[in-house]
Image 1 (tube, rainbow, N blue to C red):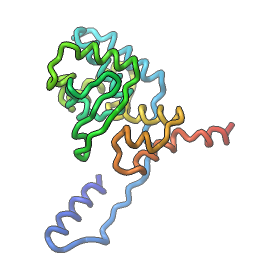
Image 2 (image 1 turned 120 degrees about the vertical axis):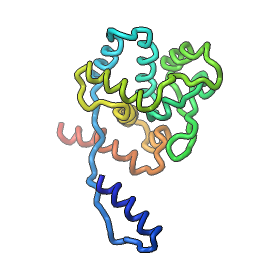
Image 3 (image 1 turned 180 degrees about the vertical axis):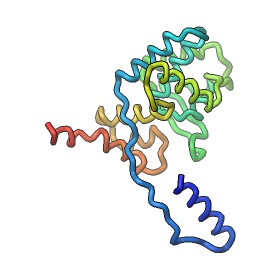
Length: 201
């Protein structure tokens, strides 16, 4: 928070004509959360066993699975349209930083997605939920599952760590996540570093 405030103040002072180049706030490096497979199973159980709005179970399960299998941000999930989904891949248009990207789909999720959107119009939003509503929903499901601290971005973290644990190249993961800076993606290497586990063993 302090670093964000410092950035805003520096921008303002530069515009004002009195730059503050010696004004810096050091941000401590922290690792993204690590989510166990069992926690994800509990999350899906909470969705399938909800007592109200049962007609939304298919949509909500697909929403969470797509976040988990593509690493899409909540705003990207919210704005995803029928025309951006193809047989074995989808296109994320105007992602963070205004960038488009291509994400391959595993066969199982591709089939479920195609079945869900088959009667939709080309420019129709798939999930029809605002970004804040997506966060609220996933937060509620996590709470019912007894998972504190699990939110939409946790699923994105899980996607990245799963790929790296299975031997994916960090540059490929960077491209799939839409990270501008490789250093942002490399943070995940710290929690999937097999050599650390080997050393302890």
